Each structure stands twice: as C-alpha cells, then as structure tokens.
Image (cartoon, rainbow, N blue to C red; front, side, top):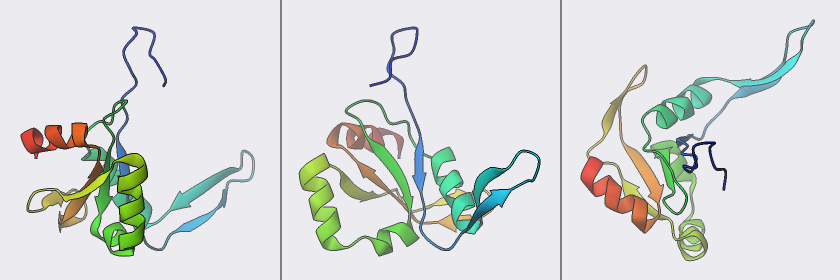
Length: 119
C-alpha cells in the first residue's frame, strides 16, 4: 500500500486495451522509450473513464478487444486468485475520440457495489 502524506490510501484509475501498437526510442539529445498508437490511446481513454481503485476495491476498466482476448480459463483463475469478476459497464458509453464503445470492468465485489451505484 502507498499511503499519502495525509494518511489516505492512494487511488488509481486503470484502463486496458488490446491491439497493435508502436514502440521505440524517441529523441536524440534526451532519448526516451515511448509506446504509441490507437491501442495506447484507447487504454488512456479507458483510464480516464474508469472509477478509482482503492486498496481492497480493485476496478480495471477494459475494452471489448481485451475481453475478446481473455480465455475462460484465465477469467476463472483471476476470479479464484484475485476475486475479480468481469462485468459489462452498462449499455456502453461514448469515449472521446473513439465514439460509442461497449466497455467492461474487472472488479472485486467491494468495487462492484460501487459500480451498481455509479454505472
């Protein structure tokens, strides 16, 4: 756990998308490793539209491309080990720069209670 100076737990937003991307070193004077492409932009939009994850309330906002890449065995193992369940996020949502998308959450039961209240 990472605790902030005010004693509150650190909250993060996580977005995941699957697909092609580009990666490489950018720059000559101050080179940096960078990852870019539509998949990275979609993951960023998933994070922007995610609910915060807190200790014991994990909530991962994932794209439909990621859901399609997850095997039933993997989802069963994630549920057994980490207590995360896959849930569709409502009837879909408008994602800036992407349009209407069906998105999903991988969430713990405690986070799922918040999902029911917040969509």
